[in-house]
Image (tube, rainbow, N blue to C red; front, side, top):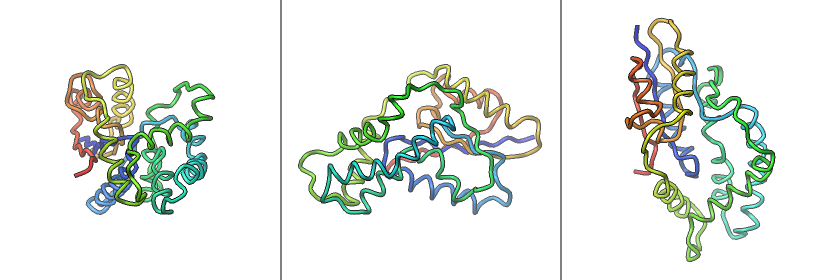
Length: 213
C-alpha cells in the first residue's frame, strides 16, 4: 500500500503564488490517470467563504490607494487573497476539499477587516519609489513576501492536527495519492512540522516550494 502526498509549500501573502500553484496543479492533473483522493487546504471553510466574498472589496480599496494601477495589477491582488483555498477547483472541481483549519475561532473584527489588512500587507511590500504598478511591481511584491517569511524552527499543535487529518483521510485504502496546499514551513523537514510527522507515519511526501525562481 502506497500513500503519496504532493505538498505545495506556498506563501500566503505572495500575490503571484496563485499562478504558480495553478500551473503546479495542472501538471499534476496531466501526469495522473486518476484524480487525487482529496485536496487539503490550510483554512476553515466558513471563514474562507466570508473572506472570499471580500475579494472585490480588496480590489476597490487597492484602486483607491493606487488609482494609476493597471487592472491586471488590481485583479492579481484580489485573486490572491485566500487563493490557497480554492485555486485547485479549476483543475479538480469534483475532488473533496479537506479543510485543515475547520473549527478555528477568529474574531468577527479580524474577518470584517480582512481585505483592508491584506491591502496594508501588500502596501508594505512596495517602496514609495515604485511608479509603474504592473507585473514588475507584482514581481517585487512576490519576492518581498518570501523575504519577510519566518524561517522554520519547530512545528506546533497545528502541524499535529494537520498531519492527523491527512493521515486519517488516507485511511486503509489501496495505493492512492492526495494533495496538500499549506504554508511553506509546514512542508519543512524540520522536526515536528506536518511533513516530518507524515513521513514518520509512512506517508511519502513529494514537496514543491512555490517561491519565485
